[in-house]
Image 1: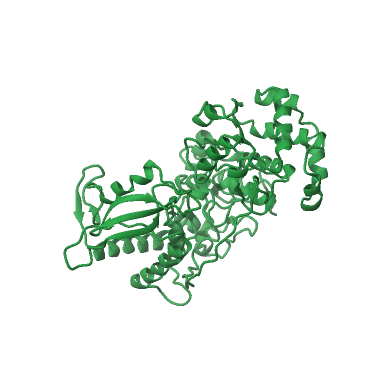
Image 2: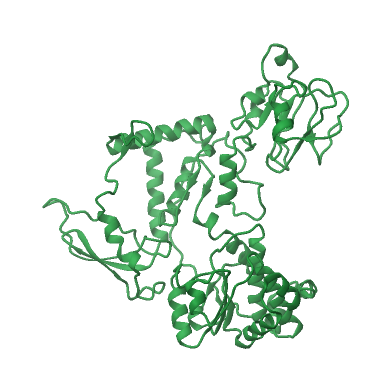
Length: 539
């Protein structure tokens, strides 16, 4: 395995770097993570009594809290009255954080499984033994599959920043997190429309259309709290949701929209706003680009058309659009976090963003507020570089508009569990004894050749097939009914049949569905046959 350019990194050096990452993560968070304050023996500093300010880690909201500590033990968790995010509140789940600290079944020390899975046989390890074992396993995986063969997955807790830095220090850029799943389409849509992901100013809003979100049950702070306050102050809430949720039950209006038709609804809203000149003309003229194209695009998406798609009456669609405009700019389509995701979820969310732009509520009270970032310090880390790493993430090229540092949970999952996908690692390129392998710069996939006939004569498989870690390359004779490629064509139909090319006899087969490309074969030639991509002809 290739070492990092400026020398190998030891386990202690690795832990030193990741320790710096912990400090960096803590500096970037709202408060230090509340850790278990267990009772200690007298004279060891376990007699702490007082208040410890922190943030709740029982869910992703991170509400401000105050831990009441007696004798080094947390006795109670109270809300922080000065926390702007949680508005001086702490829910029942947050209060249960004390139980998480002192649960008798919590893991108290490292354990190593000694029997079969499910047998319950464990060996207790010291922390040094556990660190050495983990480091050894990570090194073994890195040697066999490259450093990017290790996938890191962060949750919604405060360790997410640390996990990203840990992966960077280890040398892998295959990292997924909460943002890779829950927030992906929303963040992409609003970034592509506004250049920023806004914060909804719900507490000052007067009219809200909430598609899919269930804020009175799936709590988000301060949105859930502010929505209750805003409705008490006269804010109108309209919920679009096939389900009759708790939020729908408390809303002013609920429409059981047909699943998957949210974009049709908001295209019709945009049609009404534009055709009746109800949009913020000053904001559109001064702050936007492409309005004429939008006007032409939504011209055909009338309320009557949307009524057939959404099963919401056309008169109600027009009425809701006019009510939004009348309350603007203190009106919004709630951006939400995520609901049921579809292939076009990013474009669905963009329709939310576009309607908000038509309302002119950007950075206005009661609309969508531009978030202010707090500048934090940073700790420079000289992360290692490994030359044998693949050129990109494992989910690269599977979908457009991904975030490089987060990727997509679904596509990463699919790439990992599919055992026969090219990951662009380049092993076949470096293994080829003839120097014939190369990677297409546009697709990062290896091309094929016909230079391995001497190896085949010796009964050896092509070197590129032997070294492929995911078995994305298959060797065999198409006319041999027992060969793997014959089975692929006959049973799995993973290859596509096309016309043969003259004077070629290569016998390496790529499985259909490898990233960005399909390979084709023809059964019309005797013996081994030629394969190549449909969209590129080779001579």
